Image 1 (cartoon, helix red, strand yellow):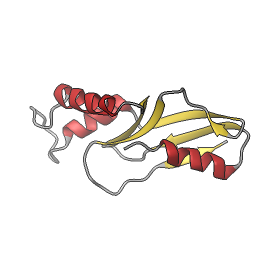
Image 2 (cartoon, helix red, strand yellow):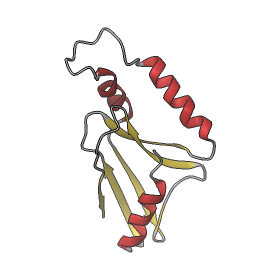
Image 3 (tube, helix red, strand yellow):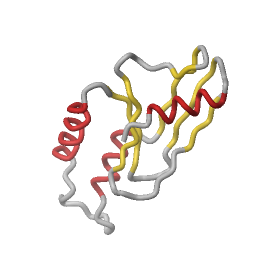
Length: 115
């Protein structure tokens, strides 16, 4: 799910002209990534490739049946940081921020800190 707009609003609401925002997902089966947000086929391509590389069904031994979700989260990571310049989130022209849910839908949290 793209969360770029939400993160921009957090930065604007805080009113900092310069600094950093740190994002953290406190879950073992959800992560964060940055990628192109102009062409929706990029999101689809990433999802299909991840599911091909790490299928839901496999020779996993984790008893909860969501090993693929844990592996995908480890590959993506669960933290990001961005610069704040001129009171705005600094992103490249085509970049978007994505919250990646690998084992849901579930109720999730996103922590942030602006310094």
